[in-house]
Length: 370
Image 1 (cartoon, rainbow, N blue to C red):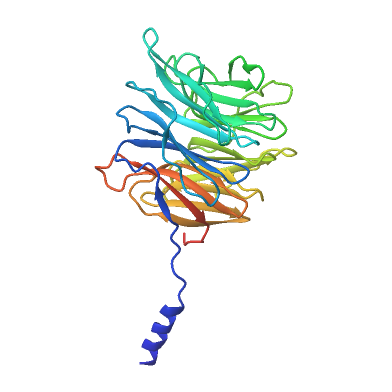
Image 2: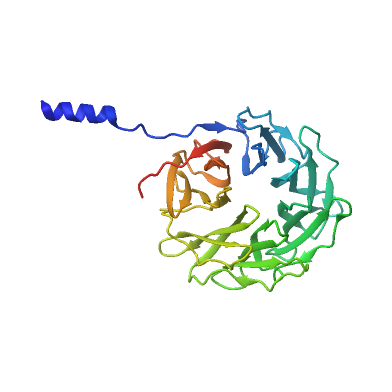
C-alpha cells in the first residue's frame, strides 16, 4: 500500500512534458513547400513559401509583430502560369524593410527561369519587381548588410548541374555584374551570409569530386573572392550546407553521410578562423539541417528526425527538444530571438494523402534524452 502511495505522489510531482504550440500557416490542402523564415530587429517575423493555392505555384507570405497574430497569406509573386514561382528567400534589414527573392518561370523564347527580387518597407507595399537573368537562374539566397546592400547567390542550371553565381544590389545604383563562384556545372545547394564588416561567405556542395564535399569562399572588403576550399575532410558526402550569422559570427551546418550520419557545425568570428567541425549534437536519423544564431552567440539547429522534428541549442554542450512527431517533417528554416527561443518553420505531411502544409512553432529548448 505504501509503495502504491509513493508511486501516486511521484506521478503528481512529475514535470509535465513540454509541447510547443504548432500553427498550420498554409492550411489550404494544396501543395506547400520550401518555407523560409526571417526575423527583424524588433521581433517581427515573416514566413514565405511555395504554394499552389491558385492552381499554379506562387510565393506566399505571412507576417506578424512580436506578440501579435499572423497576417492572412499574401501572394507576392502572382506568376499565374504553369511552372510559376518557387523557392523564396527572405530577410529583414536594419530598418525593418523585408527583402524577398525567388525563382520564376518567364515565357520568353523557349522559356527560362529568372530570379525575381522585391522589397517592402515596414507597413508599406511591395516595390515593383526586378528581374535578374543569368542562364537558367534558380534557388536564390539573399542577405542584407548594414549599408542596405542586398547580396544574392543563386544557381544557374545551364549545362546540367548548377554553377553558383553572386551579385549585389546597391540602394542607389541597382544590380551589379554577376560573378561566378564555383566551377562550372559542379555545384548544388548554395547558401550565403554577410557579416557586419561586409565580408560575404558562400557555401555549396561540390560535386566535381566524389564523395561530394562542402566548399566555401569569402569575399573580402577589397571585393575579391578567395579560392574556394573544402570545409571538411570527412570520408562521407557533405550535404546541404546552411549558414547563419549575427553580424560578428557565422555558423556553418551541414549533413555528413557516414555509417552513422551526423550534423557538423563550424563557426568563426571576424577575428578568428574556422573552428573544427562539431558533431556532438545527437541527431539519430538527420534530415537537412537549418541553423541560426541568437544575440548571445549561441548556435541553434532544426532538422527532421523521421518522424520527429527536433530543435537544439548549444550552450557549451547541446540541449534539444522534440517539437513535433508528425509524419515526415522536412525543409526546416530557423531563427532565434534574444530570449534563447527558436522560431521554426517547416513542411510536413500529417497523412500521405495530404500534399503537405507549412507549420510554425516558437520553441523553448527543453532537454530530451538521446
